[in-house]
Image (cartoon, rainbow, N blue to C red; front, side):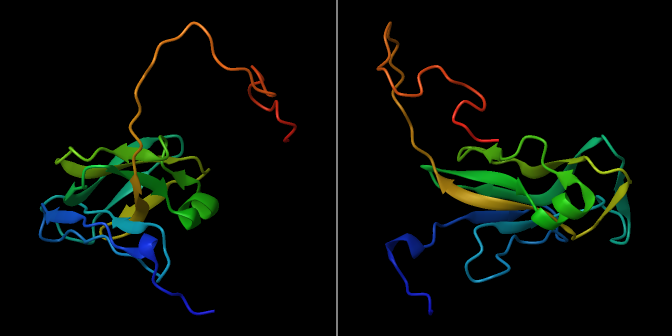
Length: 162
């Protein structure tokens, strides 16, 4: 089945500023990919063959060498790459990490190694993905009563799932 353009296909403009000449501009790696791949920009001012070792249980902040201008009404969600997570245990500890539309600093990716072996991050390696998503703002209203539902106060695991 061929993909046809719809209202939801209109691209949201995402302005990107290179903070390091060697930084990789995020790109989609398939026609219908939800996330732009984010690449490591390592190390600062050194030769490109250098790397960073992420030891099991350790959290590191990986520089990307870019800054973003996300349009108002949207956020950036930094998510793990499925291959790194399932094959090596490398994931985003605060997944999804949120980038607010008014942030203009360098984009860093927090990664944790949940695997059993050290993992080497190399310059230009794709380390996470960025999804641009709409944000719904809300009006907070304090109240003494909430409407009743069938679920009520049932919390974790209360809906019958395993």
